[in-house]
Length: 345
Length: 271
Image 1 (cartoon, rainbow over the protein chains, first blue to last red):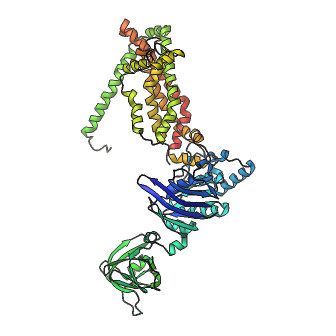
Image 2 (cartoon, rainbow over the protein chains, first blue to last red):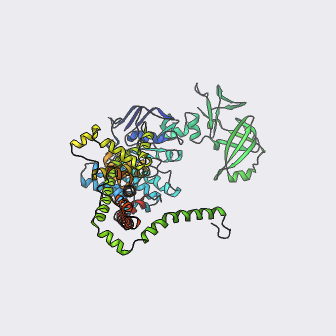
Image 3 (tube, rainbow over the protein chains, first blue to last red):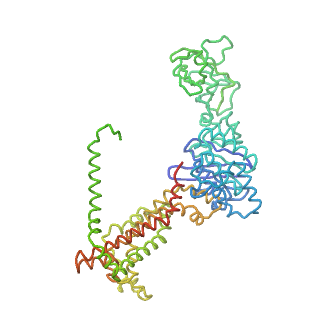
């Protein structure tokens, strides 16, 4: 269990402020945020590698705030692997064993299991320089776990990998976490990774935490405009509310129910903005006339920008639908937004 | 470069300048090496004074390098890894011995080690003499050669990612053990280069040594003395021997430590 209390780290030009996080025993916790949010800094603070200004860090009830890194029992895996280039695979993995007095037989068994699990048996005597990215990351994970840390910190472990290795290491991490029962704390800027691996997540932005909760909850119910955009809600607008209506500039959107007070934004996923060529004569809730402003190729899908009045909506269409509807810039269309797709923040 | 295109004049300018530089360095050396006959060389090496001076040159330089290695390595590490107020100032102090004219180095050290200074007085009382002794020679050689070692090794430490040390600490190794098991082996190549630079600088020193210790004679002083007393012809064979011995020694040092060094270098290569 990691308990971080009112942690504050001040550096020239950057500060982590008011960080309060509780990571449960054996949990897979993800720390999410864009580049420069302070994620790596926080990991290094937990590992004891950067001095903290104030606050406390406790692991399993023990206050480790002022304990040197070598006595913390916290493993770290960096995105660039940070393997010792002058040592072989096996020498890397066993690097820390001599500092941990354990039963040699149990330790050997654990080592064999780890290497088997991570597929490193055949690589044991190899030099580090000839390994692939995925192999290097597996060595780094084995090296950190070999000493049985109470917590494993992962700093964007998938970031530097090719897509096929990324998939592989993602599964390795998930299985390993289920099997070893060690608390994992992973930093990432990729929400999809967090969805796949994490149980709970903290969203970090400009050195502050914006939301903490189960990953699926953060995904479905973002608390701030920043989190909404981070989890892929492409339409975030400031709004005023009047009973069960939201007013965005000159548009009135019907909501399912009147929002709580102090809400100031609406957020809509691009895939929930439906584009129609004709206005359907149904009950006509939240149907607006607009003009296609731009069609942007996003690879698998296309993003269509539609202007209605002064508001620009972003919608997501597959290539097939796009061709079928023959959507071109300047074309008049109707958009429909179901009240249930509108998130109020 | 595309072979079809005519080479541009600037390229030829760089080639011409390069050739001038190489010739400028090699011509005098080749001339000097070719001048003495084998008989001259044989006579020179049979002279005990010559052998003694060359040996003295080598082992005082070696000692200077050893001292630089011992105290310069932790210092270079400090400079490479820590920021502290006045760091720029400290770094420029390190470079001072490179800039100061060599006789001034000798005079400055004598001023401190003389009886009139309290430090010199203290040293005399415990039996350390600088004027005209091997101690004096080693002192000035270390003074002039230390910056070369510190600067080289500092750059070597800076090239090692600090994350490697972080990981080592997180695995349970103390700062000292981390230095010994991770940083030191990875920096060994730059330390070797530092030692060679340091030795090379020390063995070529003349101006500072001649002030502090004309006797016992190191090779450059002996060569100077033969030149002023007997002329060019008598100084050349000694010079040739000094150069030859140094070349062989540096080559040996590279071979002996090369095995481990090349492995480290290969390991450093990003894949």
